[in-house]
Each structure stands twice: as structure tokens, then as C-alpha cells.
Length: 485
Image (cartoon, rainbow, N blue to C red; front, side, top):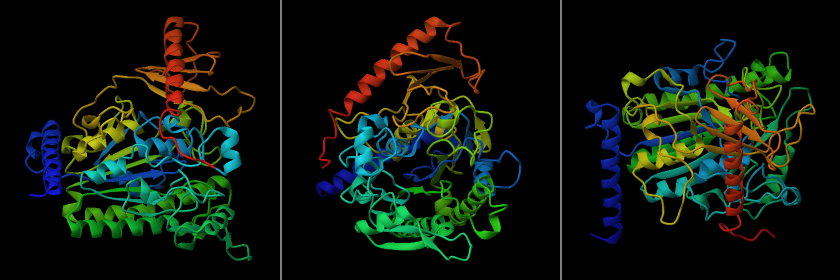
């Protein structure tokens, strides 16, 4: 046998053992069947609030297809994005590390703006990559949807998405390679117009460009994902797919029938419903194929909190760009009929505190993949919780830092740092001032600041989060050096 053959045999053997172990932990009766590496689809909605799905708060059938995944799978109510804004949130999903390690702490924009804010122009392709790790374990990998980790505005020399371990990609104006760019048609008689950031993207080249009605772009990503799945099935490879629609981000342009009174909120709801319809076609395709439905894990979540006036976090405090719960706590659904035990289907995990970097670590475990030597991921393996075997608790706290370009809200100071340890959450400025301590188990709405009543807890967490911030931010200068001229 060749060296390559031996390596693949080892990988498949490890995957087999891990899959059996995970299945046995979940439900002994299915252990004999769960011997394949699972297919994984990560659906990362853009700017959806905590209360936007499943089961939309007004009880209207806004997202019946996403709701059906929740009915058949698991819902997590204490899931957190690792950043309250798009680019760093996505960096965490790609790398399995806190995004500040990569020098990405806010959204990536034009070069001058990035430089002013201390933000890198793109994620360094030598950073850890979940797609690359899974690819090395035998997976076919693809990214369809928003990227926002380099390439756009005036940054045309960023790496292509395929340089991060993906076999294929199709994106929009926040990435390079083949892309679909939005036409905005508000039916005002002037005809469709090209979105300005799309015009900037088209001028960069670096891939085939197609202009598509804004309301049909998510459907195009779904079509490409479906095609990729069919090709992977023919080749016999397991697949990992990022399906990252740029719904429900502005500009909000749903089909005419879903525009309501034309107000921002109504347009948002229309985009939400239109996105759900497009995703429903993918869900139906997978359910109709036994080999897929028996071995596919689908995750649906959001990159960060909602934009004010559009989505909703219910009664949670804060929104996109803030470290309050409304900015970082997100909806999260896991679906996989033969991966999640039948007894756990349709249940809610309100105990496990889970974050993006933990899901990355759990994906790697499920796939039987190996983290490269010398690479340190920040997430914890919470596979047993992810697939519904048992409810785990984290061993270490979670940490966040606020985007440096986010100002005050209605004159209110926005904390720079946050830490969640067990039931406690502390928010504080970078210099340690203005501590806010909340018992999230009893006060998820962050109404009662307990910093003065529990000073020992506040001081301990204050010291931890400031020290952690210094370590993480300092790490970015020691790793992933590249030229940004």
C-alpha cells in the first residue's frame, strides 16, 4: 500500500472508532449503524436575532422549514457567537480560535478604514482552518455564501476562499472567486440597480461574476450546495459545507409579495420568510435521500445579533455590535436523525453554554479528524451535547472583546470586554472600569448589576478577562504574519 493509502486508512480507521464511540455514548442501539464520517452542513444566517427563529415570536409561520429542523432535532438556548459582528464571528467559525488571535476584531472594509481601526485586510490563509482539517480527513469541502474574511471594496489581492481548504466556493461581494452580486429592484419604475459594493467587487476580477436579483441570491447558494452534495455522493466522500447566506442583512429586498407595508421591519420579515423557503428546498432534498438523511448533521445559527429596527432578540439586552446578550447569544439548532438519539429529538438544551469555537472542536471530533501539530484551538469538545447524548458544562470561561469601532448607544457606555463563567457574566472596559456583573441564569436580560453586591466575583472575573484579553491580542503579533501593503 502507498504512503497515501496508509494515511487514508489510518484516518478512516480513526473516524470509524470515533463515530462508534460517539454513537454508543448517545444511544447504544445505533452504534453498529453509525460507522461513517458524518456529512456536515453549517448554515450561518447573517444578522438574525435570538428571537428570530425557530418559532418566531409572533407565532406566525415565518420559518416553518427551520422550525421543522428544531422539531426533529435539538435546540440550544445558551449558544454564543464568539463576536458581535460579522468578520470576527466568521473568523472564529473558520479557525476554531478567538478572532482577536487573527487580528480581526471588527468587520473588514476598505484598506484605509481597516488600517485606521487596526483590522487586517484578510484572514491569513496559514491560520488554522476547519475546512482544511476536514479535507485532510477525507472530506469534500465547499463554501457557498457570504465570506467577509477578505476580498471586497478595494482589496483585490486577498486569498481566494479555496486557499483555506475548500474545494469549491461561490460567494458575494465580501469575497473573491466566483460570485453572485445583487441587483436591487424596488419596483419603483427605475428598473434594477447594481448594488454599489457589488460594483466595487466586479471591478476586482478574480473570478466569474453574475448579477442576480437580491431576493434570489440565497436560492443560488442553495442550488450550488445541492449540486455539490450530489457530486460528493457520487464520489463516496463525506462533505462539509458552509452555507452562509447574506440574508437577513441589509439591503432588505424580499420578493414583492413579501414586502408588506415596505417598512424596515416588514421588509426584514419578508427576507426571513424568503430565506426559509430557499433553505427548505435543501432540507427536503436531504430528507428524500436515505443515505443523506441517515448521515448528515445540519446546524442552523446566526453570525451575530440583529440590526436594530430589523430583527429581534426578544427581551434580551443589546443588539449587533454589543457584548450584551442580544449581540452575542444566537439561535442554534442541530438536526441529524441518525446522529441525534431519537429520545433527544425535539428537545431543548438550556444547560450547556456552547460557542462557535466549541462547535468547531466538536466537528473535528465527529469527523475523526486531527488538529495539526502545533495548532492550539480555543474551543472545547462538547460533542456529546451537540448530538444530544448528554448535557455538558464548559471547563473554561468564554471571552469576548468589543469591535473597536462601535461607539455609544444613546449615550450609554458600551463595555469593551466580557467573560462568561458558569452562571456569571462580567462586562468591563478595557482598563477595568465600569464593571457590570450579572447572574445570567436568573437574569438573562442583564437588568441587575451585582458588581457591588458580589465584589469578590467581580474582581476575580475582571482580572481573568483583562489578562485573557492581553494574551489573545498579543498572540496575533506572534502568529500569522503576512504582508498587507
